[in-house]
Image 1 (cartoon, helix red, strand yellow):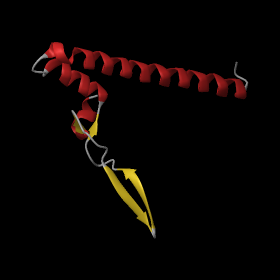
Image 2 (cartoon, helix red, strand yellow):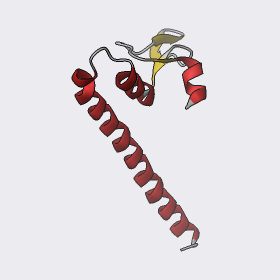
Image 3 (tube, helix red, strand yellow):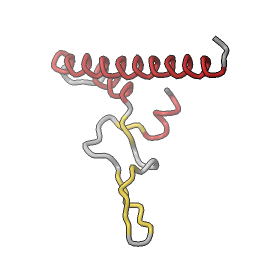
Image 4 (cartoon, one colour):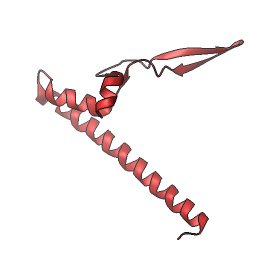
Amino acid sequence: TAPILFLGAAFFLPNLPVVDLCIGDYCIPMINPAEQFMYLAYHIFILATQSSNPTLTLPIQYGSTLVLIAITFLLNITAIYFRYKYRKALGKI
């Protein structure tokens, strides 16, 4: 978590940092990885510790925490599914 904070985590960004990648006549919008980015755990931390009125931000904190837990749960379930699938394909189960 700490290296992510030093790499450019921002509390709030209203828009994605998009740049146009032009190849010949075609331009493709892409997210710029060199710009600042939002980090959900940092967002929750700032809301919980540095808000002027913590009771007003409590629903946002709970919602952000629920989204973080849901994303973690879904990624873990997906990893378990693919691990089972590939182990079965290799004949190790």
